[in-house]
Structure formats: C-alpha cells, structure tokens
Image 1 (spheres, rainbow, N blue to C red):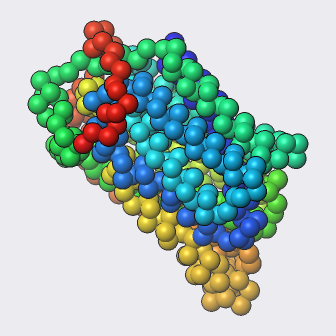
Image 2 (cartoon, rainbow, N blue to C red):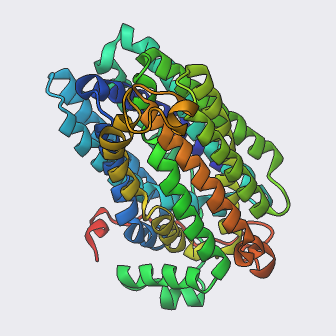
Length: 450
C-alpha cells in the first residue's frame, strides 16, 4: 500500500488546487452571466474528452508504462492551468476561454484516469481494493471539503490570480510523487497478446466484446449510464440553485458540507470495505442517494440543501467504490486499461445529453413554469416546493430523484445484475501478481502512433 499512498497524497494535493480554481471560476461565470446554461456548457466541455477518448486512453494504459502516462497527463494539465494564470493576470479572461480550458484539461484527464485506475490493481492486494477505492473517493471529497473554504478565504486575500497560481504549483506534488515510485506492469497473457496489442480500434473492440461476454457487468454499466444521466441533469445546476437565492459564501458552505459528506462516506468505505455481496451495497447506497437528490429540491434553504447534499455525497462514493472493486475483481489485470476505458465510455455515454439539456430546461422551461403566475405555480409542484427564483431547478432535482429510485428498483430486479458476483468467476487472484514485467518507459513520440 505504501506506493499507492505516495501517489494518492500527490493526487490529493493537486486535486485540492484544481478545486480552488474550479470554485472561483464557477462564481465568476455566474456573476458574469446570471444563467445556468454556461455552468452546464462548462461541465459538458469538461466531460466530452473523457468519453470520446476513452478507447484510445484505455488502449494506451495497457500498451505503455502507466506511471509515465500519468506523468505526461498531469504535466499537460499543469500547462493548461498555466494558461489560465496568464489569462487572469492579463485581465483577458472570457467565458469562452473557460470552455476551452475545461476541454483541454479533460483531454489530459482522459488519459490519466484509466492508467491510474488500472495501476491500483498492481499495487493493492485483492482484499484491500474496496479500501483503496474508498481512499480515491476521499481524494475527491477533499476537493469539495477543503477547496471551497480555502477559496473563500484566499479570494479576499490574494484574489483570483493568486488562486490559479497555487493550482499550478500543486501539480508539482502530483508529478513529483509519480517520479519517485515504481508501478509494476502486469505480465501479458496469450489472449492479451493476440487480441489486445493490435491497433486502437481493435483494442476498443476487445474491451467491448470482453464486457458483452459478461452479461452482468454489461447490464450494470447500462444502469450506471442511466444513473449518471439523471444525477447530472440536476447536480450540474447546483451553483445556480444556491446562487438564485443566496451568496457565493453560502454556496461555498454548501459545497463544504457536500465534501464533508463525501469524505465521511469515503472513510466509511475505506475502513469498512463494504458488504460481502458488494452489489447489494451498490444498489442500496444509490437508492439512498436518489432519495437525497429528491430532498435537495424541496426547499430554497441552504441548511436543507446542504443536508441533502451531505447524504447524497455520503452515499455515492460508497456505491462507486464498491462498483470499482467489483470490476477490478472480475476483469483480468492485463486488460483492465482497455476494459475500464469501454466501461467509462458506456457509463458516461449519455452524460453529455444531460449537460446539453440541463441549462436550457432550467432557463427556458422549469424556471418560467415555477415563477409566480407560471403554469405550475398554483399546482401540486408549486404547493410542495414553492415558487420563485431557483424553484424550477428545485423541481428538476425532485424529478431526477424519483426517476433514480425507479431505475434502481428495476436494476435490482434484474437477476444478471443482482447475481453477477456469484455467476461470474473472479479474474484476480487473492494477492497482487508478484512477477510483473520490467518497467518500460515509452518514447514521447509514441503518443502520435495509431
């Protein structure tokens, strides 16, 4: 676990730095536009590369040295942040600049993620995979817990310029941690040599066929795709929801409560490790999270919203970490880069649609319907959650939560999902492999191949 923890600490510091900039730029966008759509567009640009490039990224994670792939990706993200530093310091920052920055940052993150995830299997014993996944969720929760508080304090002291400069400096911790460790490469199986070392399109096809041949995993991914769509249709509008009736400081407090919930959930998973039947934990905690999403939309009250987000983000890292452990156990280590790439592609496939729909639905449909005198103001929704600014977004949260609960119920009734841990044999031995391939450093020019 020591090598994993060194990498993890470097990533935590870098993630917190990114969170500082993300929070500050999000407030700046709403102050400039006053609309929900720019929020959704920013998230869309920050997600598309992760979806479109996953087959290529997964193939590279299996072809090349994973440590160096992560180093190159983190270095690229550092350069993107440096561009933001320049734009802010020259007072040249525009909303459309942020779209491009989000796009470029997500491009590098698309290559970092499968390499990071696949590396964990080579570093952590099988029995500790769920705990390692919990620690990865802790890293994300630290961004939401620490970054808003720090950003609120630093914004008044050093301003936006100082914040983005700190973000740039934190990347040296992530890259430095990777430079001082060694990540074993998995030995190749005959099947991997024949099916997985061809051209990029063949690697993508291999990952697709691998999952299609394992019905339970494939159906679980289809369920995750629907979950991601419904969650993001609402959660991408968190900033506009809170800022519609309150201040950036309150938004920071809500995000801190959100991060605290994610931290507690991640720590619970890291200590507990999850139930013996992990799929029950996945379904149960997604169900709890969907109820919290519904609650968030019921009141235009920061304490109510913060409480809902606490429960929501307490549940999601546990469900996500347990799901991650299931896939790490059922997928052979030497093909996890390609398979996990297709896994991400499927589970995130309709998220862009949620981002495209969320802003216009909020600004053009639900917000007008829930204003005083709107078509729904005097009906059950208006009576239940109130009318006025932000109540249309609140109704979107309520609808998303209800649909999530229904989808989770149907998924649990599907025997191929419910019984996949029993019906599908493990592909991972009890301990991590002890005779990995020697580490190979790929040439930088290989990035242009295929």
